[in-house]
Image (cartoon, rainbow, N blue to C red; front, side, top):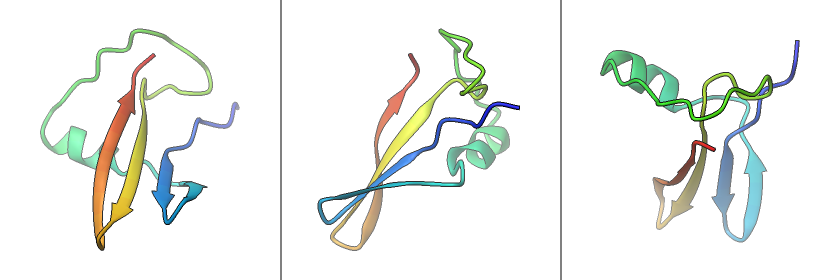
Length: 66
């Protein structure tokens, strides 16, 4: 089994890799389908999110689908 690509969290000029996929439950609840423009064994979900904590708030700043 291939390790999956991790989401990125930016915080105070540091970059962390998340061990969770925060959008998965949201997408499932809302029945949102991500158009998978590529199939890669290291990213079966078809996207990788980049998150940032700024002013004590969490923002999704980018979703890479390629």
